[in-house]
Picture 1 (cartoon, rainbow, N blue to C red):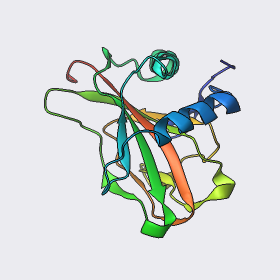
Picture 2: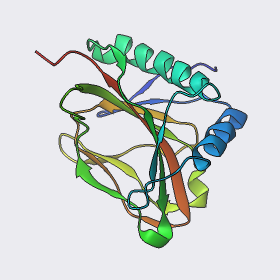
Picture 3: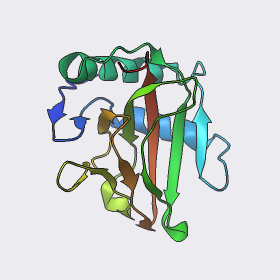
Length: 176
């Protein structure tokens, strides 16, 4: 893993150089082989032996960000990773929401791993409702964008080609 020193922005933390291009290709191949839910174009990505390394790497990145910035009480991943494909032909998007999760799970940090080359698609921006304005996350292939799960965010409609990403949530005891 290259140096994954976080870049601090107002709403999210961006970590670059976490994965090599070959590792990103491997994650994409694995995700493309999963069965997607037709309506949402998402697929659960359980920690199978051939992809366990992704879970391990993301855990390192998220723990580092948490130790340096948020200092939340985290217990780890309580849910499978989610492989997401947004198709331009379908206007794939996700409206404004927060990532609270299931009632049994208190999501604390969310992370998005950008798999697609930003030159290959249009639209499909990960955006946050910041304090005063809408903030757009970087689109660089391989960027890991980490943010508190209670931050209001969306993915704008994809207007050309497709965007692939992996969504990750860490959990912990309820906030006090």
